[in-house]
Length: 452
Image 1 (spheres, one colour):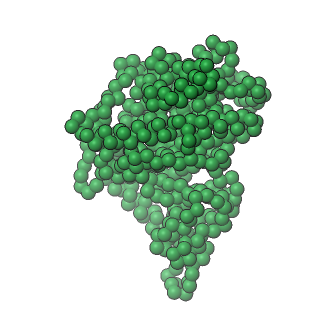
Image 2 (cartoon, helix red, strand yellow):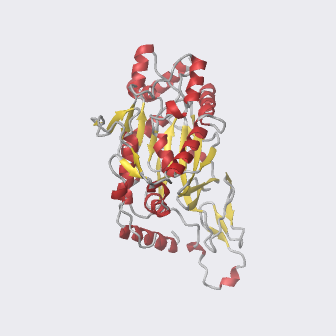
């Protein structure tokens, strides 16, 4: 960025944003530093590495990371970077290994990060202190119900403060399991699109676009089931919600209560499964009974009515349908998105199979959702290059949004409450003092130099 100072207050207003926030390389680099390298970022789920020695390659901003369960059973986040000359020490995306070996000069590390061996050690004389040269740990790691978050800044707000009210939605996602645990072992699907990363997080919590972007899918659903999916209509009882901290959601609970009152049944909708519709009747009573036994009737009713959640955990993770969605910024105009479908521990084989098949229908590599959205993100990225009139509008529902009793900001399903919530928090984070940012970078360098 050099000495250039970016006036974020001039670029983000309460009802609009300047198109340069999607295109400016200096802003992108500033985002990586202030959002992805200073704050908390979702890294992965502990269930992805259930056994000792299991590992998966991840990223925190520009940092290549190994998420690994050591032989001692502890989960760690280690930088995928040899302490000798900087080469990555693991190339395999996932697996099980007692050690990681750098192919450049043969240095070897245990799966707890400790330096195990150095080739031709006599060449170092007395200067080599192996105990100080283990793989660098990500300075801060936190775990909420199996969701692993990391921060490469050694100081900052706690994970609890970062998550705030969004933990309630994570709970609803996980508590669909009769045993209170999800399993993340059904593979993943990756896609790239040629657009800015923020287009995906805006769109993930956008109840305005589905009837138009995904019109073909909803028509196929109508032909299959004979029912219209009307939750994304302008008169729907569905709501949008800004929970603060950049965490936002599409809230189906009020809509679901109406559905239940009309059908006299619990709306176990396909947020349990992955799309829209209802669960097969087979096994529903057994499943409901298991949820009630674990949670009690009142909490069980709340869990079943919600049917999961549709929530963005700022900045890079979303829970919707059955999936954990992770967004990786690659460049100002390139983004990677990885979807991890989940199953419910203690759920029947049929229930979990139904979840996965419905996920594939809309979100799978040959599904309707991701290709539609990726194409539109590319069109937006192309459109924002034309900056004669550079402002993008986020005014929908501004006149009718209101503060709920729990302090969250609420609008109608098609309102742009979530987008305004994302941008408000984005501006707050990005407006941090440049000196603080420089100090944070220096702290990271100093900590790494100490081998921590």
